[in-house]
Each structure stands twice: as C-alpha cells, then as structure tokens.
Image (tube, rainbow, N blue to C red; front, side, top):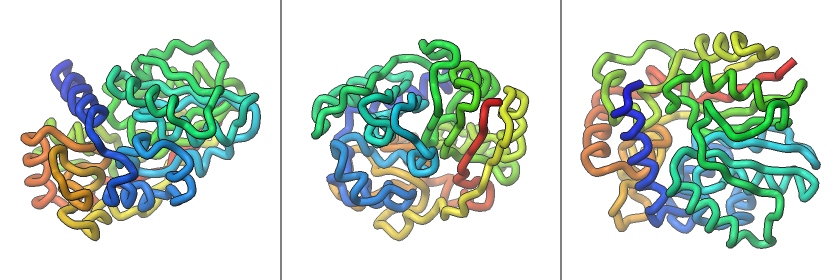
Length: 292
C-alpha cells in the first residue's frame, strides 16, 4: 500500500471523526443494529461513539470476562471500547488504538460523556502494527472492520500475537474476499477507503494468523448481506451516510465501513458499486484465534 493510499485512509476517517454522525441519526443506528448491536447496547454509550462504521459486533463474540484487558484495534469514537469496558468491569481494562488524532479526540470526548463514568478506559495514538503496549499484556484483541485497511497485515497479526498473553484470544469482525476483485475495484482508491480493495482472501486471512503463531483459527463468513442497507433510502453499498447530507436516512452508496466520504470518493465508489455487486466478491467475516 502506497503512502498516498494510507494518507487517503487517514484523511477520510479524520473527516468522519469531525462529522455529526451518531446513533441519533436513524440511518447510522440502523447500520449498527443490522450488524449485531442491540438497541440496549447503543443506548448505554454516548450516541457519538457510533458513526455507522461497523461490519459486525466483536464484543458480542469475544466472551469478555471481569478483570480482563481487552484491546480494540482501530477504535474510532470508542463504540466497542466502551461496550468492552462494561464487560470487563472496573478491575479490567479496555484500551483503544487508532492512527487518527481526530478519532481519538472524539473518543476522549465521548469518554468524558459516559454515564456512568468509566475509569478503566485508555486510548493511544498508534498504528495497529506498532502499538505502545507491553508484550503479553492483553487477554483479548478485538477489531471492527479495520484490519482490511492495514497496509501490512502480516505485521498486524504478529503485533497482535506479541501483545496477547498465552491463551489470549482474537475476536475480530472484518471484510474478506471470496474471490479476486475486478481490476477496476482492486485498484481504485475509493474502494480501498471503502474497505473493499484492501481486503484479503479468506484463506489468506486464516493462513496469516497461523503464520503469526495462532491456533484454533477460524475465519467465518457470517452471511451478512453487504447490500442490506439498500433497505434504507439511498443506500446500495455498505456502511455510512455521506457528509453534508441532511437526511439521516440517506446512507451512502459506499463501501463497507467507508463512512462519510469526501464527495469525489463517495461519487466514484457509488458509481463502482452500481456496476459490481460487492456480495459477489466480499464477505463480512467473524475471525477467531487463540495464542498458544
């Protein structure tokens, strides 16, 4: 992945972070509920923690326990960090990692607005292949539609293995490929930002975790319809509202978890996804693994 591509990802998600997207928008709430978040979960955290960027609910499958330390890769506004914090309790710790300062600014603002307050949360500015965490310090690593955006996925898998304790586990929601993308999709910057072009094949995902030393690896297609948001007005792709749209039901014709894109990116990806059905090529997957 080139520097230009990485900068495009940072720019797009920085714009998401400074937007007004939240669970108060019916369309954004619908995205989260479609991928497994309950209304009760969403109402238990600040509305601004949810920006409609999910492709699953890793906290629902992580089997988090009181006293554990959990790390969320690409934490965004803190959605999964806050839900995990409640599960591990005050004797545990919930840590969020994100590479965009704007996202962490939003996450910390959301943390200050949590009710009841959370004392077991911390956020770090870092890439997910080089985290400022000690070896063997985490019980569980979660992530939600982020690893597909990483330029060096084997390095991410090795870094996850480094920070996990022996017996620690991975519970990730992500996008993976069922078959190769058409060249037009595979090389388009808008499809990269939209969580499509950066995705790797299911078998490569599994092998990457095995190569990093993990056992009991599963990468399971959860059979979600990545065009499910067509049921919401103006949506033909996967995740979030376009910036500047006053209609909260206007979920964009964008890629999975792409968020409110820059207008040019949005328009280009909408054009591509009218030409290609993303369900033919990609899947929302649940990823499980254990560090021996």
